[in-house]
Image (cartoon, rainbow, N blue to C red):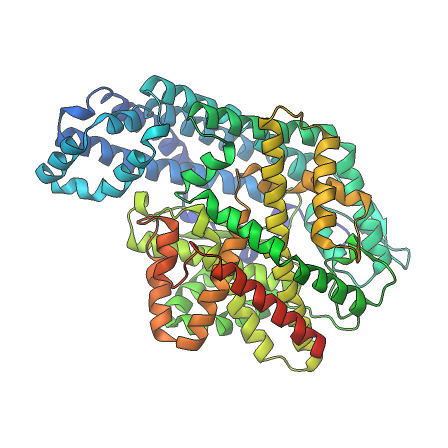
Length: 597
């Protein structure tokens, strides 16, 4: 950990992503940004005409596909440029202009859904018979008509499209404050040496063996968030009110119902998750007790959550070593899969290390007709190795879907988005555990797996409970003040971590820093996906080629079926509690294995 973060221009070229694969010349970005409006205008000229005939509908669908490709490329490039240095005003402007173009296009094309909904089933069937080319857009049209009861008039749809940029203001403000403007102090470790804090460095300090550093960074980090508590609360309140506004406009009973219906998933899936987690909370409390025992502390604090449970053992894994490990661990998925992974490493699909102003965390993104990209903030920890294969799983899901489906059918729903990424993590876990060089190393890797369960199955469900509770509070008219949000979060933390954990008062401000609270009920899908991934990885390792073939069929299916049906292709049925309960049983077994070691 160096004294300061490098500036963007100081980062080695081979550790940065090559966005020139999208636009080698930014004049081309400018030209395609302009073209977005031109194609949207062509579509707008068909307003009121979609019922005229099959050929008219086909022409509009073709133009809409062209527009989707354009906006995907123009916006994808702009937001990745901004993310690599959020303080760069040039790329801030690029992102804002791209968003404005996207919103403008959405306004001009908002008539499409209401007019498609106005067609009778008989008219549509006649259109399909007259023009077989329309079959290409059948899935898209069916998905629009599925939401018929929640679609509005063309005028109202245009109004909602215009409001989308305003509704995104809270998320934008959160990103700017969190990534660009919020600065953290230096803290001292047990030797009196100063360590500069940042969003990217917070978790590494919490993983440190130096408890004095963990405590100091924990208090300073959340203390900084607390200083802006009313601002965070205002931004989150704006996010929630935006969701409620759209849910009411679309005649849903709640913002949550609206969110899951958009993914074609029943709210019962999330309710079953809550039920299973609460029924198995004893396993989480058992994990906390084991952590306290292995760390040998009289009191277990929230700044003891990330550090390995083996105080005398550590693993540092360089980026080069991580790439080699990933190739070995993912070998069961076949040579064709590995060939694309190698291409990602060799051809700069990945932005690897943290630099000043860079967006925190990690993600996989990209552009449909180019290739996926990954943003990392790699720090040589075991956790970073798992993050690498996690984001690679997202990228491979995108790659397979994009190769097999056109852009409108390739965009898989959020509900299944975390399955491929987590399957990769589970495969890496089994490989590293089976090839551990010592009992200590094996225990260290099991420790990571247990932490993944804690962080995904339990922590993400806790996040979802916070999101559900606070949205329900707002829907009932309860103000979302900083103190009210603090109380909800702290109470949940105590419930999930149990009596052996000291829920330090600072942890009540953790909600302020979670970007996923601006993603409209995203996080519960981490938990359901984790359960599905445990089952899929188990099948791949036990059954081999047949399971791999089914899994790749799932990866290649995009959004051609509803998410629950897609998972059935890979052998997982989330209409039942069985996958969740089975995954939690694996958690219990891993705790026992750790105790025995």
